[in-house]
Amino acid sequence: MTSPWSTRLDVAPATSRLLIERAHDELVAGDDRRLADVRPLVRESWRRALASAVGPEGLPRLDLTADELEAYRRAHPLADVMDMVRALLLPGSAEESGVVVAVGDAAGRLLWVEGDRGVRTLTGDMGFVAGANWSEDAVGTSAPGTALALDRSVQIRQAEHFNRLVQPWSCTAAPVHDPETRRLIGVIDVTGGSEAVTPQAQLLVDAAARAVEGELLVTRLRARAAPPPSRPARRTATPQRTILRVLGRDRALLEVSSHAAEHIVELSARHAEILLMLAVHREGLSAEALAELVYGDDATDTLRPEMTRLRKVLERAAPHLAPQSRPYRLAAPLETDAQHVLSLLDRGAHRVALAACPGPVLPDSDAPGVAELRDSVRRAIRESLLAEAGVDVLLAYADTAGGSDDAEVLRECLRLLPARSPRRAALVARLERLEER
Image (tube, rainbow, N blue to C red; front, side, top):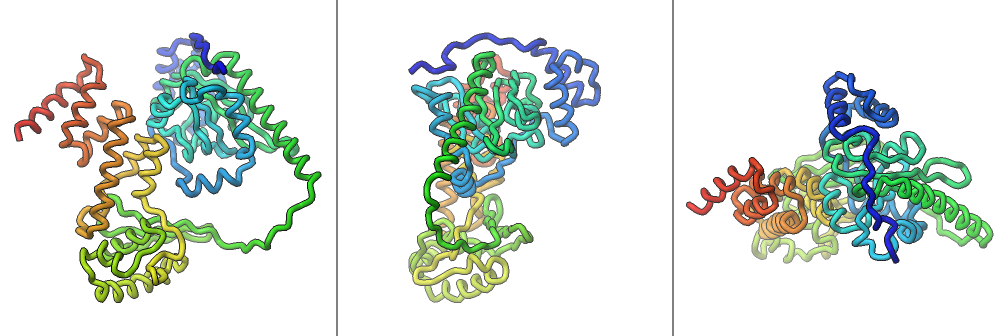
């Protein structure tokens, strides 16, 4: 089946890109003399972004971790119509469609981002990934955020975006409503090149949103006609989110948050090592296996009193995590910032992953299990960036401790940079110094 985006038209904005960029810069600097050159819809969106203290550069917030995203998607009403969205907007080979289709919730958080693999790799570098917040309050003017703010379909072309990282792209988005209450429940967006902002693109995205609303209504009416299924009584509990921060620090932080409160506990180096191993090995570990990962030998006699002390710490700070024995395991899943970075890489958010990684896992720890995890995270970041990241992200990685002495990374940066780029001379000098060692 032919992709609806296969015919690429050169659709220029009403004013030149240069005029819009200058108007954007003057508005950010507090001088809006050129704003008359900008479409009113975009102009007002820029002003809302400034009022919300949105910066002209920066990455969106990642509001949902991998586990939270999966659970939230399953419960969201648009989950049941995703096959329809794919059939309407990504027929045939989605991987070669030339565009990315994103579906988000009413708060602007992207829940599904699918489509052309090459485009997803490039847009992922600017944080256009599932779990990211693309509301106007988070990133300023963009089709999904502005469509939700105005409750109507919009098209945003390249330099009209408030955030400079997004300006290479164009997008069309339409809101989706509850078919009965008309409450806003989400947004459908198409992002790509000029083909994503044709009049035909807006008609297609609008039609997809209306088709989704119709399908939601039909599904709801069918469910009402069927006999209600019996359901077991559900227990209510205060939702808790717990994360162990181990990147770039030797004394890990355990952050525990709920709707009621939030507190942070700094762990000892040994407790950090034990808790990290239990977080990674969710299925549990025997005393011997855990001792081997933490101490490097069969030190179960040393491990047991340490586990008793750790249990007392967790019973005060995070009782839902209190370790169980035979095998040793945590009573509830524990997220780590290292696993969060790996999840971002899997979603193609290379720039966001790099920003979320302040350093290696527990850098001064010599525990065998920690050293192995530290190395696997380092290798995953390096290999993912070398394989898929854009040159700007790869250059940023080359300036970190992990990439500064990596000749292969520096050579790849040289390969990706234009022949006359002023950045090439510094890279060549760094490579020469490495070769002289």
